[in-house]
Image (cartoon, rainbow, N blue to C red):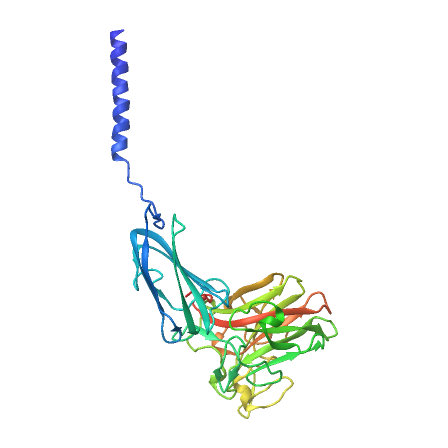
Length: 390
């Protein structure tokens, strides 16, 4: 019995020692993720200052405040006209220009953009308490995300080779205003006109940017009842390389995105077809010009798209949703046109630096069904899809 008891004691000691040894040599566990600090009892905050008014084309909005403790805080800007929102979250015992939310450049989260002449509520809230700081500011001029950003190009009404707006905001769509931008349609006059810049109040829906949207609507007048019409953009200078719409450095199709806000009504009758027309210069030349279809000679066609001999790249977007969505399409995901006489006879190589036309068309499903879509703020970006919060 004494031997048995001794054996049990030795085994028990070894087991306990192993547990202790294992516990002492266990690796430290590191937890990854954001830091969250709730406001303690008696927490206070003070001295909230907000820059106002602000012209976001030349300045920023600075926010400062002091807290009694280090805490997780959120700064929220909310436009009282647009409904646009921008928020920043950080952890600190103060807000200054080096803190998250200390500098706001006028960007937005979500769909809607802040507007010129808009009052904005500013709220600082804290984790673990209903305590807040509040202020307000005024935007004199809204932010222009294209300023100083070579990776963003607006697509809007072009005058003399210069984009004068991005979202059809300040100039009406002029059907037949070739060569810079024009609407074209085979739609019946229900409703009329086919392409129109309209106030958001007409459509009873908030515009993404500003107060206007582009409405494309109608019933197809074609024999098959599908194609309704579209709007096409060109760079303008048709007899030179400046007729190409994208920078010469944008050579990688996998890095180029076409972005546009589309609003659907849930009826599931419309499809938006994006088309990118390249000028391959692959067809015969005559007197410095290029054969078009039907065969004609015109020197400006040296840098223009010839549908019979150049590539057309397409992408279909079914508008089977309700409300606004930001749609981003990568150039490398475009498909070659299946029509031999309309973009299906080029060299078959995606060459984005040779894009001479960009087009958005509307097709009805089923045939002869009235379809309507709203468009706003088309943007071409390089390196990533368009992100209004950047």
